[in-house]
Image (cartoon, rainbow, N blue to C red; front, side, top):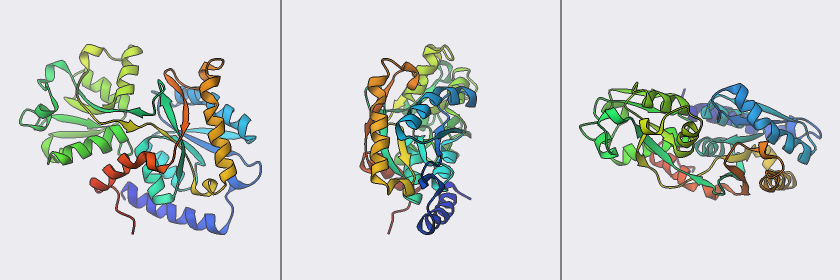
Length: 299
């Protein structure tokens, strides 16, 4: 079953339940389940990185906030849709899916070096003979190996897929082998020469270079997208009905930027806070989803 069908099925049940009964998270004092995507190389490090933010939200909201790392963007979108997660820090495409199928709503966007945007990129290694994206989509790229991120990823899947489709390229037919894996694995395997090219996002590449996980000279960018909206903080459809609660979440997140001077562990390096946003900010991702047929227009 595809992600969209799974989300449709789970969201229907979730929305019916929300109509008939208050969710556990809406009950006074009930714990809030805070889902976070796998931004770090492993679950333990991811939990440690985002635990201070969960504790900050707990203190400001006066509720226990239970942090849980979800391995894939696809999984996080599904968990927000089916009620396993109340609040999520998630990739843009995952958010758009959860919004489209289950009515989840963005309340804030994370800032990276003061900006709410980032870029998808495609990378190769120096010995590939691929010097441009035109090489990749042309005869020189035919039969090569190419890695996408998981199918819930914006920069690793949706946006590069949209680009290929605009060029009349079906990746499954053009490339000899197509992989779907994690962002860190894409960079590691490309720089090692194990695969010819792959899709990633600019911040992941920069961070892995800064941390010494890959060498800059082994990772060559051959394509960059237009600016994309950063990761979203979204709440479930049920919680979004409580406008006073939404405002408290937004206020708590807007406090993070100024607090970083005294509490730098609230966010990973180079992340500088949050800005309140709404669903319209994610229109470029929604448009790409519709153009690729991964979303169907609502009637």
